[in-house]
Length: 340
Ligand code: FA5
Image (cartoon, rainbow, N blue to C red; front, side, top):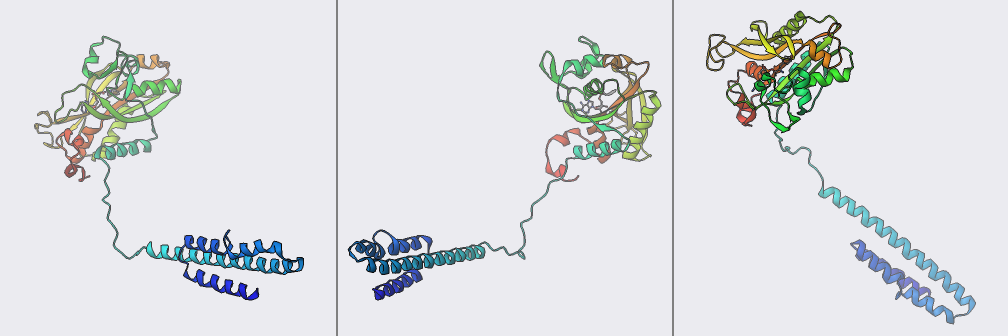
């Protein structure tokens, strides 16, 4: 009998030495411990033995069972280790090899300009507000002193969604939203964003463009605050050599109103096709917040005053980089975009 176990042990070791995969290992285990294995045959034979013989055989069978299980577990561990080593070798990375160069894009010039203007205003204590591009007629026009049928609405002919909703024609509705939310408290915000108009596209006009709105409302705000703020902005952006002109204008939501022009960068003020021979390029509209607008948003105009402005971001960017056609911003020509 002892000899039989010795032979089984030798066979097991021979079989295990041939095993290369987990599947083969399972098969080997079944061969030695499974239903048709010699061990099971020995168990089956036990019923015919005496108690003493049963005891001796039982101990040997159990010893052999444990032996097989331990040997299988050891082999399983060795197989797993070998698999990990093989995987590590096959997935090894040679860090000294040259990498694949990814070409990084750069920020769009309009984004760069917006961020630059934001930084200047944040430095002057302004907060940044946001508003929706699909806007209510109520905020885009009515609460800015432009009731239905007002002739000045025609200056900003719009894309309407329905009778009460449109793509905002300027960032000024954010003034109304900010004042309503501030509930008679002072405000000092700028709001950058896209606006839309049914405009004819040419070198300086687009039907979609960007503005930055500014609004300051507090006690004792005057026109000099407006002029000082905008002059600082222009000087920070273009240096003191660029001339800035405040020209009387009209907006129904400011009184008095101004338009701010700067000398044409292309002809230096002599007159050319870009500035339509005027020598100046208009960059923004501004003025003192109309008392009626303050009233409609719950502010007492005898106590509060304010100024507001709306900067055309494309126009400023054109001046900054000497871009002679606004359409370059939207045509996604990489030769143009890569220069910024
Ligand atoms: C307005 O939109 C007023 N909401 C500005 C304002 C705000 C006035 C607060 C008073 C107080 P205007 O239509 O002039 O104003 O536009 C302002 C600026 O946007 C212009 O100076 C110009 O720089 C730019 N702009 C206007 N129309 C276009 C266009 N079609 N394409 C590109 N830029 C434009």
